Image (cartoon, rainbow over all chains, first blue to last red; front, side, top):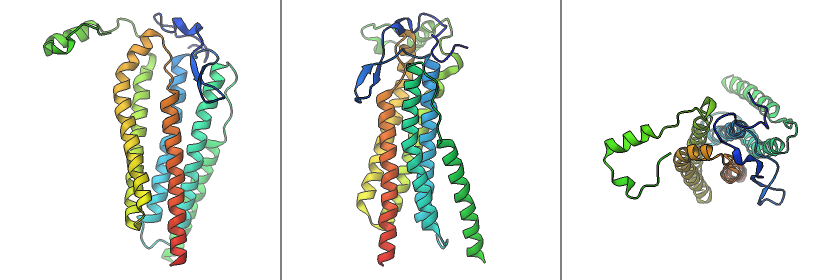
Length: 140
Length: 137
């Protein structure tokens, strides 16, 4: 397995990798920046980003459902707000994380840390517990 | 890789199939089917986007908030476009990999990222508007 800045070990793919590839630079325009990482890592980063985007969309759908589709559930507004807030947080950080990881790979720097997994894990745990408590209170 | 022969589309189906099989690469160039998994991830994400947009359309329609219905419809349209692009781009990615070009999609990723950020903020806005409406009622 090549390192994350290694070259593709098959065929003549990435023969042109010595040319700087286009990338969205600090001024938000496509500019040559760093060197092209192994395409497998680029695609893995992209899939991770897409998984976070799906998480954000699922949280948004859950929040909208809590607000609008559930009936006779005390506290549904709070649950809906919390889910939608978590969804927006996940969406914003998913994009920032994808960009910073791609930049780090291009510039051959260590991958950045992210608090997003912790935030989403804690958030869903707290919201799940809150739903359980509210449901118990509503039944009682 | 298919040859850029003029009138390629008019060949009989059986011949086109034979040509496709003959033109398959002999060496493995996509370890772990990376591009296929990535294309599937794009398609899953696009389908999730359509579903989330539909939920917003339904919720906003129930509340009679046509602006948010439009936002939901826009989300469905963009996610549908991404679904179409992902399916078409999957074929092209073979060519990209063989040519050794960059496989990163900064523009598509930025579009999906910005669209999802906008959608989630619109959903928060919807929640605020309905919450304020309920307080005033």
